[in-house]
Amino acid sequence: MKIFLGDRLVDEKDAVVSVFDHGLLYGDGVFEGIRAYNGRVFLLDEHIDRLYDSAKAIALEIPMSKGEMAQAVVDTCKANDLMDGYIRLVITRGVGTLGLNPYLCKKAQTIIIAAKIQLYPQELYDNGMKIVTVGTVRNHPEAINPRIKSLNYLNNVMAKIEAINAGCMECLMLNHKGEVAEASGDNVFVIKNGVITTPPSTCGALEGLTRNKVMELARLAGYEVREVPMARYDLFVADEVFLTGTAAEIISVVDVDKRVIGDGKPGAITAQLAKLYHDCANSEGTPIE
Ligand code: PMP
Image 1 (tube, rainbow, N blue to C red):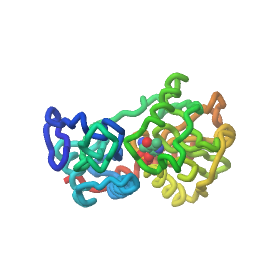
Image 2 (tube, rainbow, N blue to C red; image 1 turned 90 degrees about the vertical axis):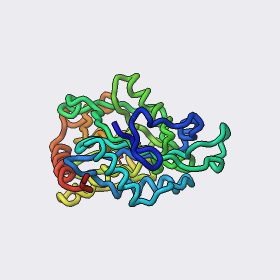
Image 3 (cartoon, protein in one colour; image 1 turned 135 degrees about the vertical axis):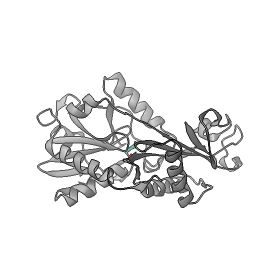
């Protein structure tokens, strides 16, 4: 496998970073998870924009233009002959001292890995997944804003641990006010009486690109889509619940805290949105050539 490291493609065995990299020492950096379908990188410009916004928010200067970064992603896919797969784009603060001071890190490090991903077993896509609410509260927006896709995922990791301990693969995270924020690695949607609702980013959700695309497609299909704060109650009494994420795509939730959602099977509107999403993902995007 070829990895993009710094400013060039190298063999996987040579793709090593320093133990003094602050991405490792402090989780100091930002990242993106991107998907390629059918020989095209889906939503590449949107991912690059979010990456640079996240970097700006943590005062991290990326030593490449957006255009060069987009080209590096395409080149990494090409070098690995990856026409369908998952791309992990990581920017760390780079090599510094053992101290926290990021200004002592001379240059940000760029890492691009293009590989395959299967986040959940097919069975969960066919039958829906069950989730539980976890005690780990989503990061307070004034501490680490959840809109920043930073390398510091401990908040999400701790939520994931709770989910797995409870026998689930995903969970529901609430914010400091008890409002629904998102799942540990995905956004959450509720459908009730044909209206589609998702929490706004101010409630602690990442502005997921899959979320944005699903909202756009749902509106085009004639649905009313709202971004409003919601409580666990709204999920319990929903007709359908689903999660969205680049890696997860769209997956139905059929059980929340042992409340069966709808009739306990993946819902019709979720299936319709998943089809619209896949049709779009397989026909749009930046060509890998
Ligand atoms: N929330 C969190 C915490 C995430 O890590 C992700 C990405 N896996 C998402 C939501 C979904 O965002 P996107 O659709 O852009 O992948």
